[in-house]
Image 1 (spheres, rainbow, N blue to C red):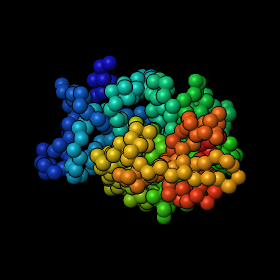
Image 2: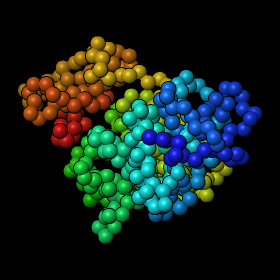
Image 3: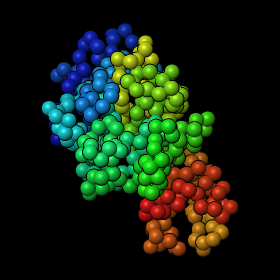
Image 4: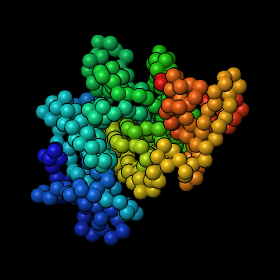
Length: 390
């Protein structure tokens, strides 16, 4: 597949780095797709690219044009990374929104087959759908995490066939054949979500966390992020005072430094395979504040990515401590693993047919508090929800 055919190069004066960067800045080190020169991807492990697409946006027209400012701010930051990555430029959208979805799906599937990580600057958040379809194209199960103040499910049945930035999740859930194993949300705000939708999420055993549960204890989000292999980030999840660059921004949300920490956790996640940042609109961005924040979030993601430990109990059990806990009202046990390298925890969830033996199981990230709970004979909530899905 010729990936170069899908991308437009970056051109002066706006996109390309200046010539007077210090050698310690990203702008002096990043390899960029320029006219006549498409980067060699043979040894590359990560690519950055933008998608100029906002036809799926209902209220945020113009969110396809923010990548120039984000790049300018990103290129000014320090270059502290020792892995090969490149900027592929602008993804060339299709004549229709469906064409953009199809082309982006094909590109993301190709990058996945080459084991290259795509970092996407959108565009409207409905581009999460082709992110998901790339996994479905390769017949791989998806653990999707949305960092968002809303659940993007269309509650109007007359528009159920339309994919927009407010309904892409519904499209993913209804997709056939379906490859969504789990959906998680970090940072939803109750005043934006109906009780009916929350009950729907509970019935599907999805993992949803209110903003108030995460604010002040951002480390609790790390196991949730570690369980995802696809992340969709809506800039509306950050409070207006820290990120005004969106048409319908809220006064409440994550602090900017918390968003950076979430992205660092995402970078450290060995199983994460795709990340998209959506809904940034420069028309509303006072003094380019949101562009600067997104650039810093990307920087923290790259820093986390550079420290990946390939920490997986299924691949290297000798690097883990193994603990067994017994439940009060069930003869089975819950098995935990703790990494000797990072101190991170996982728990083993058996398939129902092997409930007693734990011989075939699913492994999910967890916290030390989950181990403490199981040690006292109680079932952790995330274990129970995963068991129900299995």
